[in-house]
Image (cartoon, rainbow, N blue to C red; front, side, top):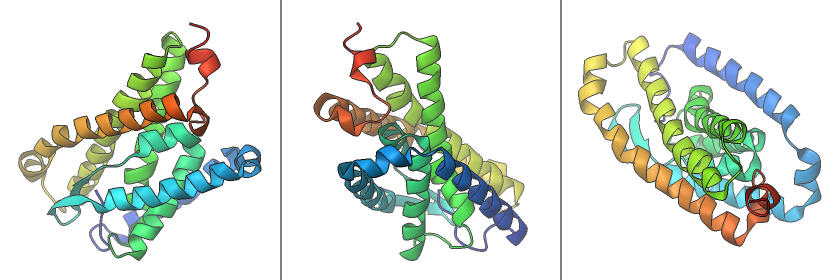
Length: 222
C-alpha cells in the first residue's frame, strides 16, 4: 500500500514524517556500521538488494487510490542485514520509488513506515521470539522469522494502512472489508513463500550474506 500526496491530512503526514525521522535516527545509531563498512561485499549486496526492492515494489496491482497490492520482501531484507540497516534501506528504496512517481513525497513517512518499517520490525520480532521460546534449529529460523514473519508483516502493514484510511475518512470500513481486505490472504502466502525461499537459498549457499544467521548455533550444535 503506497499512498499518494493529498490522501491524508497534512497534519497526519507531518506526524508520520516526524515518526520516521526519529525511527531512522534510532536505526542509524543501532546499525552495525563498523562491520558493514569493513566488508566491501556487504555494501554491494546492500545496494543490489535495494535495487531489487525497487523492482519488486513496482510490480503491483492497484485496487483504488492508495490501495495497492505488491510484494514487500522486507522480512528477507531484515534477516540479511538486521532491522536497522533494513529500515534505512527501505527508506532509500521508498525515496527512489517516490522519485519515479509511484508514491507521494509528502507521504514518504507513512509509506516508509507501512511498507518497510512495520514488516522489517515484525520479522525482527519473530526472530527474537524464535530465539527466546524455541530451540535453535535451522527449520525454526526459516519458518518462523522467514516464512511466518513475512506473512505477519504483510498483515500488519495492510491493517495499519486500512486503519489510517478509515480513520481519515478516505474510505469506510465496509468498502475496505468487501473490496480490498479479501485480497489479503492472496498476498500473505506468496509473500511468505518468497521470503522463505530467498532465506533458505541464502543460508544454504551464502550463509555469510545473512547477518542474523549463525550456522554454529542453528546447524553445528544440533
